[in-house]
Length: 312
Image 1 (cartoon, rainbow, N blue to C red):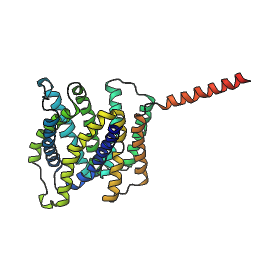
Image 2: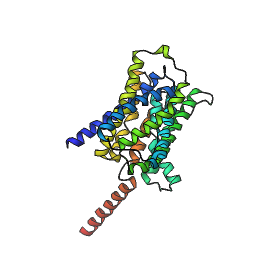
Image 3: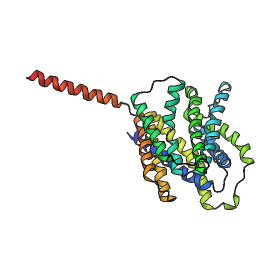
Image 4: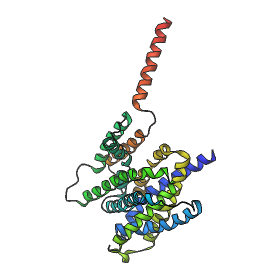
């Protein structure tokens, strides 16, 4: 019982950290370039995770035959994903960016059905439709082609698809390595690729202040290291289905944080989009489908009528 309670606390802390990370990224981008921010953030995370690995898994070594797969996943899931995400947050609000990343499970389902030919369940279809409508309401349908906001959405959806690809690149690694080992090695590869690009990026060091420093340290220490460790603890004890449901709260944390910290007021359409996207991921993760529920109700109704008929 204690383990379950600790696991729930762990996943809630992770979700809160990741939800607020979009706000910290928005603040730190005033000083750091998108690639520099990602490189420095994960360089510090690499050092922290190296210490954790030495304590928890000192004998774990990356096998030569897995280097290519691990490197590919690290480049896509760390280098490309976080660069695109940082660029996206630069041009749109943190709330909108967080809600778009909330569609990752939905796009994963679509890719599954197209590439792997997996049949979509009734829940999945409902979830996809809700998500599509949610995206429309958030974007608003009125973005001008020349606006920087459009560029922000393109970057954010690029990050979504890079994470979907990352999931496929990582799948086979779970058979040989722990969650901690995978995160550690992928962050190492991702950071190595980020550093050369960061060296040629312009940064506004003259705007550096305590607020930026605190938010950067929050991203590096908490969001890139501690949150991952807490998440893996919860994943191990609660299972993937339950932890995925808790992750649905991350966009809500961002929206609330954006409202109270940045005064990001969402209009009526965007609030509808929030509800639709969060609902879409929840529906997809339901263990019982609405079709099943309707069939149960139908079956009980038939049973009830037959019993009444028999009694007469």
